[in-house]
Amino acid sequence: MLQTFFCTDAHTGQPVGFSLAASGKTCSQASLGLLGLMEGAGITKGLVLADKEHFTRRLAEYFADHPGLDMLIPAPHISSVTRRFDTLEYHRLWAGYAIAEATFRFKGFPTTYRLLVQRQGERPEDYRYKGFLTTSARPARDLLTHIYDKRWSIEEFFNFEGDMGWNRAVTFNLNIRYGKGSLALLAQAATHQLKSKLPRPYRDWSASTLAEKVQTNMEGDISIKEDTIVVTYYRDHEPLGLRDHYTNISGQLESKNISPKIPWLFDFKLQFRFK
Image 1 (cartoon, rainbow, N blue to C red):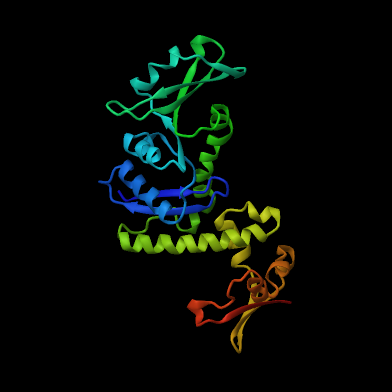
Image 2: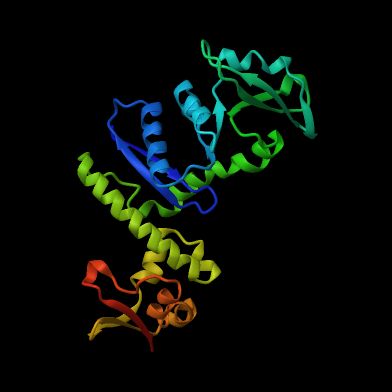
């Protein structure tokens, strides 16, 4: 089994990076590699939301040693966690929901972490508990009721953007998979920027729908004038509002101190025309 480990931005739902591993690598080993990849990309601050399989001492130690990064990880139902549920003092937030807080240490190691517990149900016989481990100093209420829900943005990413190349492995060859995944990240970034400029209904479309209804349904032609590639669009650009964003694109880039030349296209510039 070929494993893919992903990190997405919980606010935008877009991928930050990914790594591949063979079946012999543990979740902790692969996740530490992914965190190192993020650190190399300059991501040294923030809150990392993860799943139960990330509840390991090695990962917890990483966050303890990197104070700029915090973690919020669900705790599995193991005795060292569950035996404390009934002994905690809970603060009731609303009917059927209360939270409590304690400390937690992995056996044989001195580092102390915050253990947050949510209790659901009004009567003792109906109580259901769920624990979380965190290094964040934010209030427990914010972490459990407002922040952790953003963890599911990665599920939405695979649901809406899977056709970009993430829903099929095609081959187990690591080099080919890395190449395909890297190209998919570039396509993802470009498509995300395009979607952010389109009218609201288009922004919520899946990758396959956007490709079918927009990207493969445009009529136009391409020509070259001196040092510029001229892309001319006909018809369907009006409802998309493309003219407002892409007219004089070279000038727009220069105004932001970005070179309008495309290095992998022999330094040609790009110009859009709409008819």
